[in-house]
Structure formats: structure tokens, C-alpha cells
Length: 413
Image (tube, rainbow, N blue to C red; front, side, top):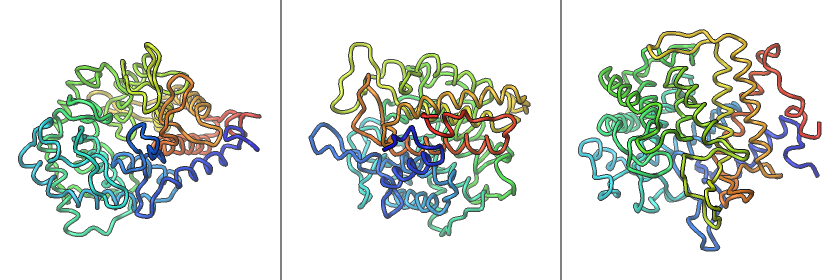
């Protein structure tokens, strides 16, 4: 029987998607991983992280399954509705990050009841709100509309107010650690606000102009304040971290920083965090999952990061124009775009080598050992997205972007 790596390219995409589908639940959500912690070795991961649901369903867009993506975003909207009162209160009076954690929107919930699982750790994660605002606006502008009610838009307006009240202050970030000011969090909420403010920043993404700013108005003053707050942190992730895997979100999906900053972020992560089996989250990361122990000086490597690097380089290769620090257009010549494509292929190849023989993307490797949370839903999604990006680019520009034979036909080629 063939291993995953020996399958032809499009069969590998199908297999990866089937794995992701097994993590999808009837209400449209995705559990983070199948791990149930039955051995008592740690937290169960067969629950909903709100961020993970949105990134996991992102693969559906790249495969044309917009109905599934809309269903997942609808579920996220329903989860927000369950905690609507918390959002309203926090949009008016800021809760204490350390002493009033139960007043924040929970970061993870039960997959059936949608009830919060615990308030014992850092739920205040701004990127969740930024990603939601960004993707809801993006799908509306692409014409994949939702049947919104007045209550829905009231909730979206309150989420916007929540961001207004505390969107460019300390939070617990993507990795649920802090509190600290994170450039990845600031970039996410700025991207979400820009999607609704949109004075042309995201116009390149849409063939038709669909105005949504009147539905949840965003002031130019808030955009300016957010841009200044993000700029004050960059190129660092935070005061305590010079670089972080989560900063790749500033390139994809948000494209919220200029070209030079994108390249600097990529260079920092490649030079300081990238490894053979994945990307370390940040310098000195001590988390290595449950049931694993790192040797002295060893840090867990996340295959997710290889997929994310492949996606970022594919996005740089995709467009002939970018922008500089003053928002002026920059033309990207073909030779540089070809180089970006080849870098994407390099990281994608490394990613597939790090996947299991079944086609699972593990949460992490500690040395040669695979972590419990295998497959990890949003990492599986990122494999599909990077696969489809490379396939689309090679079909659209066959004279410039060529997939190696070993990728197209499998490793036996």
C-alpha cells in the first residue's frame, strides 16, 4: 500500500481533505484534534477552539466549498451570540485581564453545547475577533452572502466596539500566553477593521465592489491609531519576543504590512525558528505537548509553520504588485515572483516529509517524536491551502511556475 508521500499530487490533496473532514462536526465546527486525553496525560483537544474552526474551514474556500465555509462561520457567529452579553459589557468597561477572566469571550467551547470549558487561562485573544471580522467581510464582498438578521449585525457592531475598546492593548495572543502587546494580534484586528473601513486596501481581492462599511462603520481615526500601534511594535512580535511564528498572519491572510516588512518577518522566522520538521513558535518556547519531554535546549517544531511559510511565499508569487511603507504600489518582477514560488515549493516539500504515512499533519515534533494532537485541524487545512495555491499558480502561469515532478507524481518519481 502506498504511503501518503507516494500518492500523486491531487490524490494527496483529496486524502488530506478527507482527514480534515473527519474532524468536522454536524454543526459545521472542527475539533482541534481527535486527542481525548483518555490516559489522563493532559487536556483533551477534541473540543472547539474558535480560531481553529475559522482557519480549519479556510481550506474549503480554496477547494470551492463555500457552502461549508459559510456554515462554519455561521457557527462561530452563533458561539459569539451565546456570549453576546460578555462582548457588550467588555466593549464598554474593560475587564481586568488577570483577575476577571470569566468576563471575556472564551477561546474554546464544548463542541455540542458550545458552553465554555474553563476560565482558568488567557481567553482574551484579539486575533479571534480580527479573523472573524476579516473573513465575514471578505465572504460578503465575494458574493457568498449570509442571510443576516438585524440581531446578527447588532452583534457584529458590538464586536467592532469590543475591538475599539481594547483592540490595540495587551492580550494573550495566538498561543494563549501573556498578557502582552502582540503585533500578530494588532495586525489581525487592524485587518478586520480595514475590511469594513476599506478605502481601497483590499480592492485587489474583488472583481466587484460591494460596500459593507455602512453596516458596521469604522472611523479613519481608529484605523490610524491601529496602524500606529502596529508600527510601534514591528518588526518584533512583542516586547519579550523579537519574532514569532504567529507574525506570518500579517502576510497571510491579512497582507497588512508593507513588502519590506513581510520579507523581514520571513527572514527572521526562516533564520531563527525554522527547522527540518517544522517551525518553532518563538525563541525559548518550552511547550512540547503532553506526554513528551524535550532534551536540554530542544524546542518543539510545528509543521504548521512550514505550511504557513509555503502559503506566504505563494501569496508573494501570486501578485505582480505590492506596497511600500507609504502605501505606494511596488511592482514585483517575474524573476522575484519565480524565486518566491520556488521558496514556497521548498517549504511545501519539507512539510509533506514531516507528515505521517497516513497523511496527518502533526501539531508538533519534539526531536523525532510526534505530539498527541495528530492530526491538528488548522495545520491539515494549511496543507490543503498551500497545495491548492501551488497547483493554481502552476496552472495559471505554466511558463513561470513549474511544480517539480516529485511533487506532481509523488516521491517515487
